[in-house]
Image 1: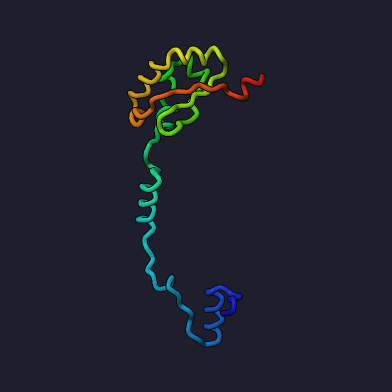
Image 2: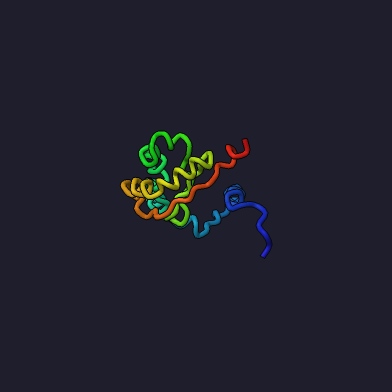
Length: 131
């Protein structure tokens, strides 16, 4: 079978010009679905409307670690759904956070969708360490 040079739309235009019947494929026989149903299915599939634990942690960060600490460290991501990674700006803050680790975990567990977090890792913030 020879490769078709033109797409179906162009071939149908030429067929109409020549007085021939249009070429209809399987896709032409399917009825179009309303887009609203597809969008709601995609929203459910990809959990778009659901608030993630990362969003909850970022929104409530000062109440989780305290106002003073919140300015000197930041939550980055959650690994394997159970380990929170926190970047801090210096070693003193990291050691202070390590001391308060259990308190931070207790504060985290008070928020919805955060109960699965069982560990916290503290990492140096790269851009601040270089200075």
